Picture: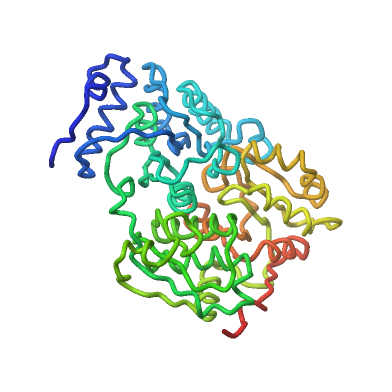
Length: 426
C-alpha cells in the first residue's frame, strides 16, 4: 500500500497544530486515502454529512470527540437526516432513550459549524455545487444526484469519513473525483419504452430499480426515451439505482452536464453492454418492489418522501388531495426537510394536505428512526428506495405505486394501482 503525499497544511493538521479534533480527522482521512489508493489529497469546496445520523453510542461518541476536540468544518457543510425529528418526535412512537442521544449527536455536528439542514436532498434549498466542483458528500441518493444531475465530483463517502473531509477541507484524489473514472460503461436504450409509460412519473423509480440490479455500481448512460425527465424524476431514478445497485453516477444523453452526446458520455469508447428494458420488464420490476402486499389488500400507512419531498412534489400532492379525505384506517406520512416544509406552507400547499389528513415529519426518515407504532404493518409508497429497504429495515410488508396510486389507496383504505401505462404496447 503506497503512502499518500501530504502537503504542509496536511502535515500541520496531522501534528495537532489546530487541536485534537482536527488531528483525529486528518489522521483518519490520511489512512483512508491510502486504503483507496490515492496518491494525494485534493481541496474540496463543500460537504454533505451522513454521519449526523444517530446509529448508537459509537456514532455519538465519535461526533462528540471531534466537537469537544475543537474540530470545525472548513467548507460550507450541510447535514443529512438525523436519527430523530428534533421537535416532532413525540408525535410518533420514538423512545426517549433514542431521542435524547440522537439530539445530542445533532448538537455535536452543529457545534462543528455544520448547517442544520437535516435533509437527504440539500440541493432543493441550498446553493448547489457547479459542474466539476470537488465536494465530499455522504448519503447515496445525494451523491448520485450531485455527480449526475449537477455534474459535481464526489466519491461515495461513508459515514465518519465525510465529516473528516469537511473538517480538513480535503479529500482523497481518487475514484469519481477524477475525470478518467467518470466515463459511461453501460448503455440503457429506452427506445422500447412506449410513450404512455415514458410520461408516467412512476417509471423513473422503477427504471432505476431495474437498472441498479443489473449494472451493480457501473456507470449507466440513458438514451432513446421519447419524453425528457424532470428534476424530481432524476432524483427518483438516481435514488433507486443507488439503493439496488450502489450507483454513484449516471449520464442522460442530451440532458445531464457530462453527456451532451453519446460519444462524450462514454469518453469516446463503446459501451461494455447494452440494456434494453421494455414494458414487460419494467412492469415486472414494479411488481418486484412490493413485498408481501398485493393489490386490494388493506393498508395502515402511505409514506412519501425518500429522498425528501420537494416543493414541486408538494404542489402535485396538494392538487391530488384537494377536497378529499383519507380513509380513517390509513395514515399518510410525508418526510421532508425543514426548509421545504416552510416553503410548502408559504405556498399554501400544506392546507389541502393537512385537511386530507396528511402528516409531516422533518429532520429524519422512517428508515432511520424507530418511529412507527407496532400496529403499522402494511405500507405503500411511491419511493423505490423505501420499497427496497422496508422489508429488511422495518420488517413490514410494502406495496409500490405512483403518487396518484398512493393517494387513491389512502382514500380507499386498500392498495389500488392504475395499470394502464404499464400495459401499453411499444
